[in-house]
Image 1 (cartoon, rainbow, N blue to C red):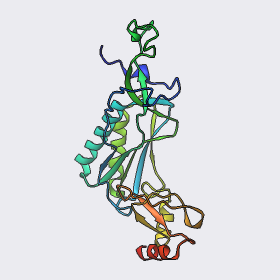
Image 2: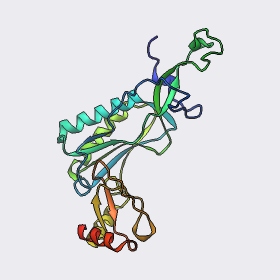
Image 3: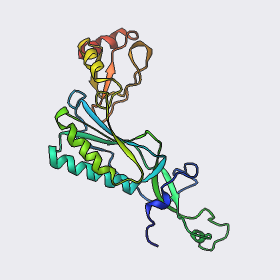
Image 4: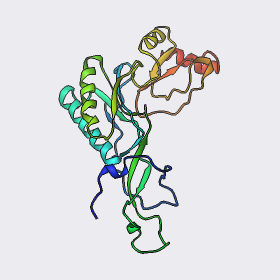
Length: 233
């Protein structure tokens, strides 16, 4: 049986059905790479950031995510170079679709044995306002990333918006605030996931694969650890 078009699985009708011990033999994902470009670039290298945001509550297949990733990656590499950006796919196709047919034909006349049918493919369920793709780059390449996301948008059904972020790269800090905090030696870029801000937040010590995040120097806590962080800033 051939592949059915994506319009058969576009809308979020039922509850999420991920891969589990009850749902085995799920087909492999079409998308395997979620980070592209210069992943280990520091926070200061790529201040500009652009997002592709969903404007519908729908499902995106893993094949569509892979096609959009390839389309955006090829355009940016051809235009500005392979080390001029860092792109990240922000959604993951966890939801498993079942084979859709009429009158129970997906059960192949087995009665109540295997009544659910067969798993057909995986999709990512996205909400309105959820980020699908993000690209951080230099200010000079901002228009290139916007054009890359515009081309990648045609690989998805429904409506998507291209939004230029006011934050510094992938962080939650504004551009003006980041420069001010960096001058005051309150924040510095590391491969640490940010979970907090100054004394009111909690920092984790889990190392990332890239340097797209920042760490804040806490106003309280272990003295020796804070002094070491102050020297890094």
